[in-house]
Length: 322
Image (cartoon, rainbow, N blue to C red):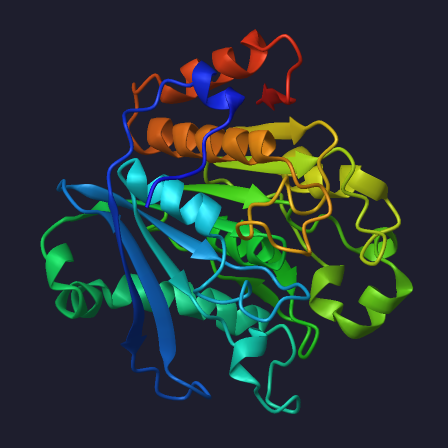
């Protein structure tokens, strides 16, 4: 499968896309979890030494985007350009129809992080389940990405912390095997930045600490992503993981983008409020380039991507770094 093209593609410096092999569900036994962990694995049909992206889905109105079946525009692009992408279905997915009284419901913030760690622990089993993948992964080059609630999950793996609302302890779930990350429309600061509904019903969002999120990360935020159901701080809230964390970090601000960032959660999905194929193309390319350069120091992909963004007469966004 090849990704849709747009005028933005004319400004990019990616290699030609390869055909993609996508296998799902790969089932990982998960004792103590309400159900076993199902993942999708997407890879180019050729190549070895593939770097790995773990992708954490968000929530939303649609049933299947919040599962291993979502985010095809990103996953297909990354896989077509040399990454092995692994997508779990977290317990928060509506596809599982879990009892709402299940411990951790409805967002299962801790379980979501544990899913990602389990995937890294079980790469041998994943390779065995996908014979075309055996021996092709570069386990020393692992990144994590996530959208919305998935950005919260990815942030914890990258070193962000929070106070457990159940027992008041500080929670650190940083995963040292992960070398870089991308946070897409991720939650920001807690406290009085949250709406009353969120503060009351999703207490884990109330105490994020980005000050020790030291892993290199690209934060992607839309300047029209007000997320009024989550925050009273407006679009700047989604840039907090950049503003409140230590270097090295980069922030990609997308002009006129809302929470769907143009439509990254699926092809032509109804819940995208800012559908824009060119914006999606930019997110595909810029996130790929960032991870490529972070995982392969000296690779010029990220520098070239920033140049391509700035070269457009009507830029889709801007990048700042620290």
